[in-house]
Image (cartoon, rainbow, N blue to C red):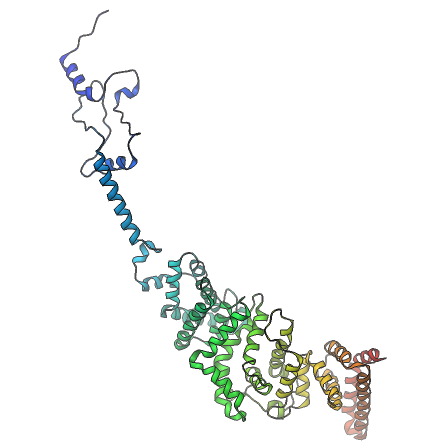
Length: 512
């Protein structure tokens, strides 16, 4: 077989490529330089690609081409590899030292963080507060800044312009103060109670100085303390009493030791305008357990004074009617005037009855500290209805009807202490109110009267029933003696007692 002759050029090309391609085979890989890096470390391979001043590329070689220049990628020495590894560790250590939970944003000044937080919805800030310690710390600084106070003032004004004093929106996600309270709760959730209270009191002092309304601050307070144990809430109340240089505690002591109500006008204005909305805004709470928490806060305020006389004054200061011209407590309204209409009684007397109802229910709340018993409530009612002088009896009856649980307490106490005449007068007043309101109050009276009869027993119960019948006959005789002048009153009296006839029948059935 003839042999092919090799030209000098071909021989020269083969000599030049001998360092790259050792043999020619039918495989496609024979035409390309193949570099095997399996035995090299990854850091060395990366180092080759990052070598300063050198750009590596695959050499395209064919048997017929001339290779102008080829770089042999030989393995570097172990000394270079050790030096490069040491340098990489130093860079990594330097990066670790300068890192923060904020990353790049950690280099920004705090006021820029606050500007960013101002543009984020409060609900999102609540979630951010629990994502990392760095964000939590930054948000606490934001809460402590004037940026946050300015935001509260701006957003609360917008809420008030739209909703006004609509209490249906309070303690909802639409209420900005409820959202701020949730933010404080989220930002401090990992801290012990003592530090959380410190954060809260520091915020309150700055907010009051800044001019934030007390009603809104009260909603923040109750939202943050929602679902806390009563013992923890007691610590908050103690902190509030000691705040503002002990001003509230001083007011309570002055109320307790004062003999003249007229000297308390300035103190009452401050107490009702500042501390009432701060401590008792929880009565508008919508969340689960809000009723029990409001009962605790009201009870804690009332217990600040151990005497029933001072407690009745506190109750009147908190929920009593005010004069239209000066805004002070109208202490003599129930003494000098008889509230004639239901609507007027609902505005002036019902708030007092509602507060007494809340105190009455404390004995039904599990774990409630120092609940109020019937003796405590009775003493407050008696002091309240005789301050500064005895109330008109119709006003006293209104107080009991708005809080039916007080009726058996008042009835049994009078019958057991030889005040049966007042007990009979109470029943007749209830009957006349049924006529005046044009409503059936038998549903209101049925349970309280039944409870009172059980407490009295058969003997005292019969005595009470006989006194009611005797006084009814006496009243009929007096009206009949007035002739035609008393005809209308006589007709109204008979009609009113006809309305409460089912109650009289209930009493008789329980005794005989």
